[in-house]
Length: 216
Ligand code: UDP
Ligand code: MG
Image 1: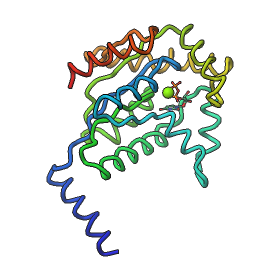
Image 2: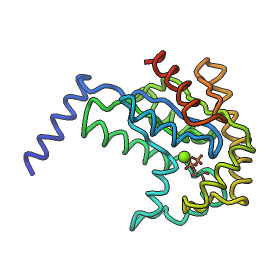
Image 3: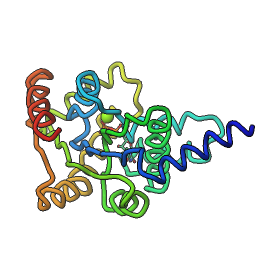
Image 4: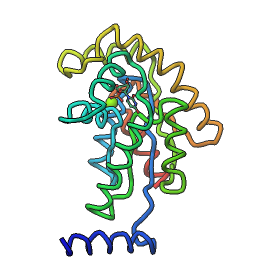
């Protein structure tokens, strides 16, 4: 008990004097099925990044026994709507904290599928401003038609409740109405790195590599 307390205390002290690095974040955005998750896995294999998918964290929270948010998350996901940020930001913050506590060298994060709307962005700013640096936005640009076809294909085996035509129509609408304006905001700040994501996995990854090698 005492040792555990001392352990936590020393971590806090280390953080206090700045030995622990501030999280460095790349937001990964793009339509449903644009290839965010697939490309993030490739990045993790080749670079020192930790992949945090907001959608995966929400699905895990939905499945967690005793979660008070399970039903809410379930209905938002099926409807292609965006879950209130209070839930998502806590999951992201916790995941980042746990990663850094386990290994202080793991302070680079790919935050995949977030921020998706104004509410998400505000929540991030409120909770994380000054506590993490957003380096840039990696934007997987893909036509809606290709996105829909990929998700329908994925739906054959993904078991996801939202990889069907009905949910997809709604997800695309949400993406166009709510997420694109967020990407546009970052674009105005010169923070967006765009990749043509309608090509093959290897072609897309070649561009991703070029971006990461340049940005460090
Ligand atoms: N979602 C959300 N907030 C987030 C990320 C995801 O509410 O920050 C929900 C939303 O309903 C979305 C669904 O989770 O449609 C699936 O997101 P995911 O990123 O897994 O889908 P992808 O874009 O990768 O196909
Ligand atoms: Mg995904």
